[in-house]
Image 1 (cartoon, rainbow, N blue to C red):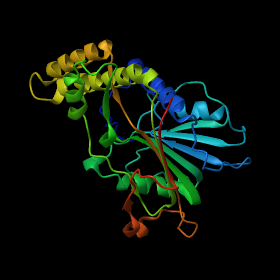
Image 2: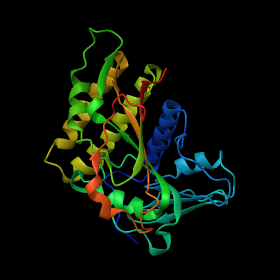
Image 3: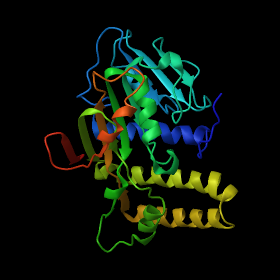
Length: 290
């Protein structure tokens, strides 16, 4: 069984955060699987890498025929539900290593979400390589991620203080990397949650940071760093209560594995990799949810 190096918790509070986070993404995007991704009605196979509580698969299963096979993978099974639909199965695998041999080239669609804080050395290439190996030639990858370079602080009134929210936001940012790993037909869809959900979205951020303070800073950080982070979270929460929030940009990137690629992956085409930027073009949609 792979090592569970996930830095956050596996308990019910973390599971609740992940489930609520999924429904916020669904409400903002108005879809689970991007509309550009075709799903065949017979014997299609979909993999969710880093599935966590499997909420993405379970929600998707309601809208697809029972003939579509839905497989979830995570480095730990601790958050897996005991009861599943017949066409959903969950497995243990490390997304930063080669997939199991019997899963190579097995999937029409691979989905991943919020791996930005998990990839090693801010390098997503091993993760792309893992997903590419799972896909059949012509299969689709959908990657959902926050674009923290576009993060904003919003207030109900300009006079409201936002110093703590701004500091908390900066303190947790990781350099954003979204790359095309030899995939074709790149689509980028970027949207912000409605201002109606700004408070809830920021409270999810606070929950994540509180987990990080408890599971990482308290145990491995410099003395007092966990307490300092907790104080900042409480101060940020007071600013949220007064009418300010962090506005995150939710970004969905869809790419198609070339038909000529081998079933094992497309690493040989890595020289084609290029940064995918959210710009105004026919293949990019950027809007605020209302």
